Structures are given as structure tokens and as C-alpha cells.
Image (tube, rainbow, N blue to C red; front, top):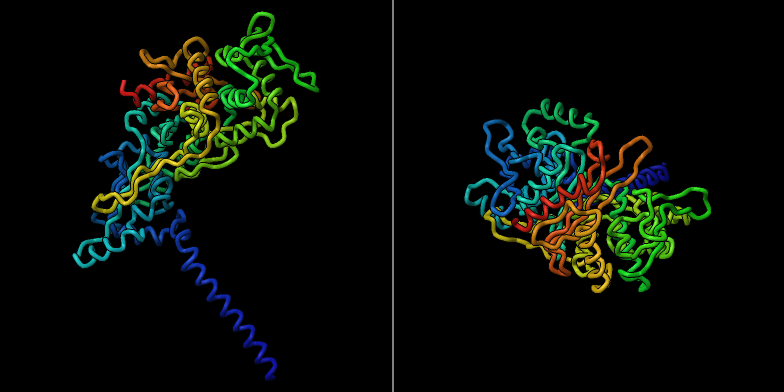
Length: 484
């Protein structure tokens, strides 16, 4: 009997220790994660009792909270909601928070530890607790140019300051209205969410960050970078460019989009191969450089890892172990290569910034409830993807693409513009994706903007090309940043 009691006591003691350990973990180690979970309505109800801080562009609020007369004391409102939805996300009593509303919740809700003194002062002054503010890097004119350029067609645009990594535009289409998901009427919120979720065009998808597609010929920028870094290629290097190329160890052939050879005798220069987007030339270059070098170069630009801006972006991929035919196709951005609009903007930015890739970021400043600066964003170098000399060479080749090649629709009068067009084949029976990557001004180390545009399945157009569909959008965004 005594032995049984002792055993029971031991069991109960172990259970008590387990309970205490779990409580300690939940209260001290997992508390922040649990509070940040979307759908945590208990936390949201508590936060609705205080005035949530604004999300700012400059001094203008694109998300703010206004007082109400109902049980929830404040209502979240978004100006130009669909325009900025990929960045702001929404703040919902039913579905929790997404976007910047989620990642910067501790600042916006006023629960950040840096606000402790403010909360004490507000308490003694008899004032309600207020949240801090978050200022974003977006350029309003560039954002509008990107959104208007998409014009309802399914796609995404990302623009970056190559010198810092600051995201200047991040537009998606179709978008959604966060006001409909942030009301105080749960039934209307659920109805709006269900409608958005049932839409086959997926307006709730953050396409600039999370949609990864074959980048097509825009990936030739990565292949060109890898080739230059070998030291065996210059702009005048003669490369094969036949009308068709037999893929190694197969009976399949790769054709040029034009259906013709890329130069007399089926040969052309390295620079011209990029300018006219010669598939057979770049497939041959890819085979010469090799899969390992292509993968290493892609990884230096950010492939195979995920950027946090602080929203987490999807991982862009270069195939793990391609065979020779797959390596040839990967070199032109096909096979299993996938990239987001953010990733391809980062590629263009790295080339324009003397080969140095800066980590992309969306938050410029966090501020106190009194709008005193608590933290300024500090640009962070991600990698040195290319030598400055090779980056300058590739940037010059991109200028040739726009001035004398396939990217003519990106030209800006009086400004040197570099670019690369792309179309990417998709599933059989579906139209290709249309891409463009551009930088301006195309002067090494002095470019103010790098932009990537993708129209999924060509945005429904009958005639699909990167120059026809995506380049004009990139041009408008670059002009907005440059103030033209």
C-alpha cells in the first residue's frame, strides 16, 4: 500500500513538473508567437480597446484607426486599400492580422517593450494606451504606376533601390480591399473573405512575394553573370547560336523564339545573344559553364533561400541536380527554375549596384506614439554576387537589350536604361508568362531603381511578349521613381 502511494506520488510529481514546464514555455518562450498568430481573437479584442498606430508613407497614413461607438472601440481603415494591400495586409477581428499588420504588430498595438515608459505615462495621465507607427519604404508614385500598369491583369511588380535594398513598389493584381476584412461585422467579414477565397484569380495571394513562376529569359541575366565570372567570356566572345540546338543525350531540340539562327553561320557574340535573347546561345553557354556554377551564381543573387522584408517571401529555386538537357533548359529560365518578382528585381538591383546584392526591406522606420523615431532601417549587404567589373559589363549588355534588342519598350528619353525581356512556357495549353527586368539610370553604382514585372499567363493577352506587355509597366515605374 505504501509502495503504491509512493508510486502515485512520483507520477503526480512528474505530471506537476510537466505542467509547470509547459506553462513556463507558453508564458515566457512561446508567448510572442501565440500572440502573433492570425485568428487569435482574444488578443485582438484586447488590442481593439486601444488606438492602433498608423502605417505611414512619409507623413501620410495608409492605415489608421478611428474611434467608434460600438463594443470594439476602434475601427481599422485603409486609404487606397487595394493599392497597398500586399504591404499592409489586413487587421481582422475574425481572421487576425496579415502583412505589416502582423509582422509589426507589437509596435502598432503598443505592446512593444520599448513602449513601457509610454504606457506608464499614458496610464498616469489618464490617457488610453496608443500604438506606435511604422513608416514604409514604398514610393507612392511608383506604387501607383505599378498598380495602374497591371490594369487588372493577373501579375506582380516589385521595384527596389539597388543602393539600399529599400522596396519602392510592391503591387499585385488582382488585389483585395482590406477594409472589407477589417470591419466590425463578422458576418460581412466572412462573406468577403469567402468571396475572395473562391475567386480563381486568388486576390488574397501576395504575388510580388509569394508567387514563383519560371522566369524564362530574364534568368539569362544569371547565366550571363555566371559566364562572366568564369573569366572566359567578354562581350565580343563568339558563341554558337544556331536556329535549333540538339539537347545532349536526347532526340529533343531547343529552338529560338524567332525560328532562325542568331547570326551568320549560326554564331553570334555574347552581347548580341543577350540583346536578341538567343535561346540556343544561352543553352550552350549554360552547358559550358555547368550546373554547379549556375546554381552557385543563382544562390549569390538570393535563390534557394527566403528573404524576409519583414514579410516572408517564397523561396526562388534553381534545380538541385539537373542532367545536361535540364541544365541547358535551366540556363534559359525553364525546366524547374522558379522565381518571384521580388527575386528578379533583386537580380537586376545586384547587377546595377556594382555586383553587390542588398537585402530587400519594406520598413523604413518604427516610431513611438508621439512619432519619435525608435529605429531607422540600416541597409544590409546580402552578398557580392559579381565583381564590380563584370557587373559593369553585364549592365552595359542590358543597355544594349533596351537600345538595340528586345527591350525597346523600356526606353526613357534622356535616361540610360538596362533591361531583359522574358517569356516563360507553362503547362501545356496555357499561355506563357511575360517578364521584364529593368534598371535606371544604368550607370554602375548609381542606379536609383531596379524593377521586375511579371504578367501571369500573359495577363490574358492574345500576343504575348515581355517587351510588349511587361516592359511598358517597368518603364512607367522607373519614370515615377526618377520623377519624369
